[in-house]
Image 1: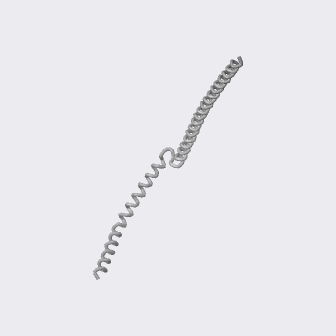
Image 2: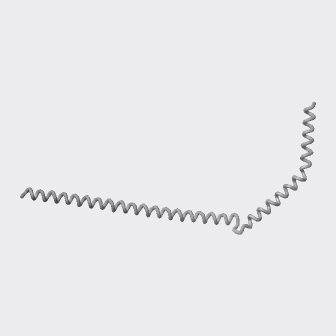
Image 3: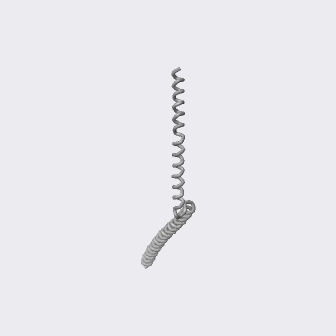
Amino acid sequence: MDSMKGQGGIQMLLTAEQEARQIISNAKNLKLTRLKQAKEEAEREVKLYHSNMEAAHQKKISEVSAQIFGSSGSNVKRLDEETAMRIQSLKESASRVSSDVVAMLIKFSVAEYEAYEK
C-alpha cells in the first residue's frame, strides 16, 4: 500500500512539473508576443516622427525658397532681364575694342618677328 501512495505521489509530482512547464511556456510566449508588439509600436512611432520631421523640413525649405526667390517668379524674370542687358553690354564693349586688340596683337607679333629676324 505504501508503494501505491509513493506511486501516486510521484505521479502528482510529474503532473505538477508538466503543468509548471506549460505555465512557463505560456509566459514565455506571452512575453515574446508583448515584445513583438512593443517593437512594432516603437517602429510605427519612429516612422511617424520621421515623417513629421521630414514634412516640417520640406515646409521650411519651401518657406525659405519663397523668401529668397519670390513666390511669383518675378525675381527670375528680373534676373533674366538683367542678364540679357549685361550680355548685350559686354558684346557692345567687345565690338568697340576688338579692332584695337587686333591691332595690338599684330603690332606685338610684328615686333617679335623682327626681333627674331635680327
